[in-house]
Image 1 (cartoon, rainbow, N blue to C red):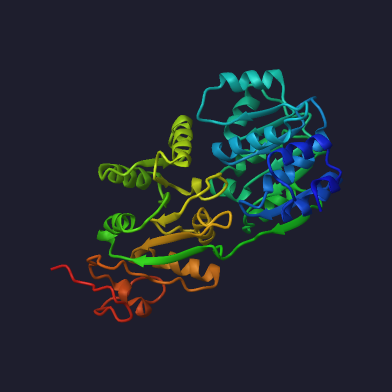
Image 2 (image 1 turned 90 degrees about the vertical axis):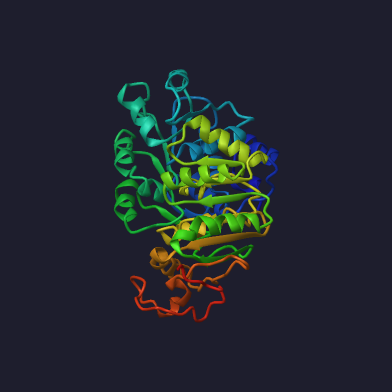
Length: 405
């Protein structure tokens, strides 16, 4: 089926085709009829499946032309909000529809001016939108279409109380669309008060890495973690690499040490200013920076193409984040490599990931690296819940392990 087969406005079809899209993706094929019919929808779809267009094209079709603020799209991060706003602008380029964007990290002035002038579609992060609601600048009384995107991320970031306060200001008679890459049990209560008899669509749910990604684990003693990272970078031919850390402090620390070693490095996490984040993304995409050190803010949703390698400096605590992180490479049918450095303290997280994806991840050594001994080299004898005592050999590994005198 083509975009013309769903009853989308000709201007909307023209807009999406002018961007080079020819055929709808599976999530779009399923979502278009549901959204155009007016039903609530709960969708589970991964990054890169065409999810934004799945709700943007039918909503623009229903809006038709300029009027009141009728569509509200909530996003968990500034970057996602900016990308979705850009997509709406691109798809509506042949329509008389105004799209607005509000998020934190920048001044209030231009955003307040936009709200006062009026928009048909508002893409927003919860905190900044609440600021405008509380000072009377924004009014949601005419909202007909509410989209909550990346809801599992909102849950992880603690935004659900803010989301509830926003939803309480939206008319009860509305169409609500709910998108989440995963559907953890904590979201069940939320869906009951948010949605009315929703149609559920699950597309591209992935519990295993893409076939285009080769991934492996690199056990190492804690004291050698950074040394192994440097060795991997020096001995790997990469075009661009994302290094994931679990905390903002560690991201800054790793980036600082890499810069000291003359690597060109961008840093991306939620404590960076909006300008710093935009510069980091633009520089990484353009090739100005060969490496980007980031927290899970970059694990999904961001439009970053051509990443040849992903390195997990810290093992993610949530198994699904492992799939999202390494999915930043091997996109658009290209191949990619993902390395995960892990220490004994992270073994339980590794085992959780392997249970989640239903496969054992290959353990690798880096040839020529002068390893210190770690009990991980005898991992098969380590019980769940921690590193066992009295482990003396590195049976099963050819790491050339040495003991520190």
